[in-house]
Image (cartoon, rainbow, N blue to C red; front, top):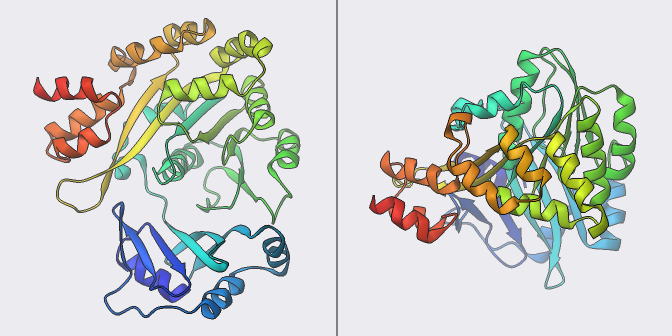
Length: 351
């Protein structure tokens, strides 16, 4: 399995896939391709052996009961791998995300400078959103690394599994992995406020309890980062509010208005030259105007606030895409496929 990851790493693949009676494949710049020109088919027995070698005895027992397993491992000094082992057609299979060991800066990732400003807050909640494979973890790693270099703080992360490894720089970093350092998100999050953190990274907002803990931490002097699988700032607010019972929504809007610092919705868009992808971002910054809209539950007005909020570093997904088109980084056809509002983007491109 390490040999297959080596090949994917050299090809700049984001993922490597293995299943029985098929040749290994990779995802390279959002496209599925063969891992190599002469890759043989792998038998079901070999795939099972390769997958089980990656798991501890405890993980094997859990997999035998649930047929699902998330884990992470390192491949020498090249990269780390986030691996999901599952079954298809009754046989073992694996999807492996390649994670570089070196954490890239916001500038190297081509992300807007306002994300660096978000890391300067001492308390509150910042969310990075987007579909699976949109680079949310990479963006968060860059923001956490910036804090690690510029502050003297205790950073606690709760992840499933642990992806980027943050060495201590100016900060003291505690990274907790589900299944290895703690049983689940719930006990880890109940304990996290007792660990004297200044900055908390929660791998994913999965349920109401996780959201409660994140809001409570953001309200009590901690800076909290997390992810949500939503495509825009509006959808993120709508998803969070609808997690809770109707009678709690007014109070929740008030809490979000006080705690939220930023929502960054992200998509990875293929470059026009075919050499990689660029991150297109929709950015909502909680100015007094935005906080008032959230407090009143007027989420549909957030798009207009982002559209007019360039002074504060805000932008819509369409504005981000248009900048890339004008710079020749992505094509108009590609931009249309990733548009926030397709009809609006078409008009913007015409102008």
